Image 1: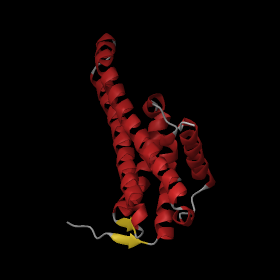
Image 2: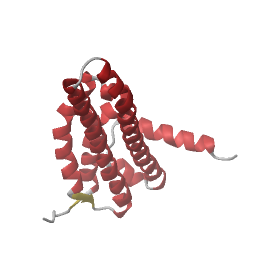
Image 3: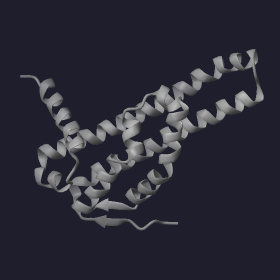
Length: 180
């Protein structure tokens, strides 16, 4: 089954970008670490946010910006969306596996099993979280580049103050690291 891809004007695509960046799940994961994602309260946030996020992700994947200068940014955005889903999937799967272990085994055997399985689960979740954070950072870097190279298109995106401040921070760090 082939999905029809819809070209969107810059302002409409910008609205999707804003919806993505301001989505509760994306905002939660931007500040998350492994302990939060392993906590029952953190898992609840993930489970509640996943369905509306997947709907947004599908909409993103079925559109593309009409402007050529946004194509690479769109690709990075969809990559970031995939990383979000992967991270949530691993966190939920880890919780399910841990609950199954607890139901099957109790006492000392459970502690021994957890000593073997928890580090693997934690490492896998940490790896997914790091990949997602890198995808987020790459998207923000590309938006910062767009801000420098094509200010008109950047302004048409009408990004939130919070996102613009993250982009400004990236631009200032880039300028500081340049040789004088």
